[in-house]
Length: 342
Image (tube, rainbow, N blue to C red):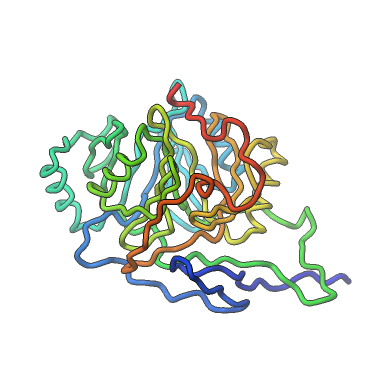
């Protein structure tokens, strides 16, 4: 009887420090969880969720179920969940076109009134929650007019670098599963979203000054920001466009194997348009993007860099060539087009 790879071990990955870095050895333990809060700094701790309108909820339900998420009906909208979690990462309601409605960020409970005072000091208007929204958070518009919510929420950003594994086997034993035995890829959590903005530098300044996010890296007209209480290399990213909009949501998976399997499971269901397999320079993650029915993307992502609570990451300004990929196929035509600005 043929033997199959029985174990998974750690893949060699760089640590969270900027270059120079060392690589984890095979079998090395992951770092212990870091503190969940950095004293003395006011900043959001997580990207709690995103909200979109789409022309057809049934189509959205089918796409994200095929992608590997749990999609739940919530009144007249849909909620996106990952296995073993009650956290709603995204909501969809029906509208004439696909449109980014708002972003919600999580804050520690005692920080919410401090954020209220900050908004008042900076002359930012406090808005009422959208109709039908059950929220006691703070609502306001960003520099592009996008609606933002700050809410009391449990920290959903990770407290340590996500564990990434690589299937392996000793000589003489087959490691890869058969096609029919691979199973469905099930993302573990929302990693980040990338949104369009009219002015990248202005957006970086606004989200730093108001929300307390920090710049991780920038390459021309693309910028990446992280949370000061410990987060992935970026929980929010920006790309330049003629107006605001939603480019992609990114989902953490356990391995490069799962990135590839996710691409195959979506292709098997007819979603063949996208970009990957590749590896990013900024963030270091392996990726495959799947084009959704409305022209935006959902990304399978593995092994992103992590910026722990307490570390002052040295943000760098990079050449534009580093904003896309270290290796992989060329991005498809129209990949960076903002359909919402048309």
